[in-house]
Length: 121
Image 1 (cartoon, rainbow, N blue to C red):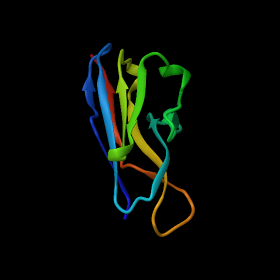
Image 2 (image 1 turned 120 degrees about the vertical axis):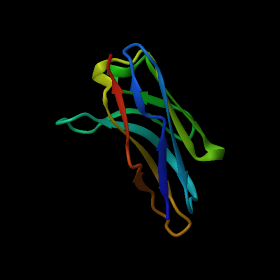
Image 3 (image 1 turned 90 degrees about the vertical axis):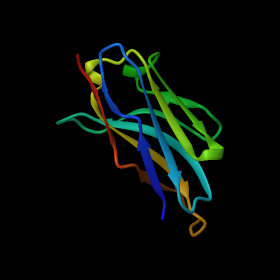
Image 4 (image 1 turned 45 degrees about the horizontal axis):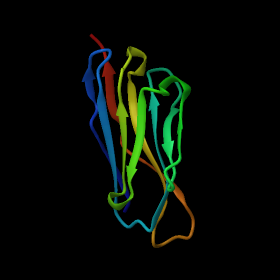
């Protein structure tokens, strides 16, 4: 079965940087869109950044100029480089991939387990 495995979260001081990685593993025929979402306590999950199969990207206004999303199609992996981190970036970050397996003609959304990012002095 398909799994999204995230890594790279942790505790960082304001102004610092972190890099998140998410690798999709399992029976995958094609990945369309990949992205990162986040959810802070008592808030709804929100889109942080997304990248489609041709490399075009989309960012939340709150992270533009600070975060960069990229992907390695050969490795089925998406990255999120986060610079100039702020306390308000503190949240659980979830990886998302819109993909289809060899067993279906339809795309389906898959989610990672989430990784905690805490920005605090």
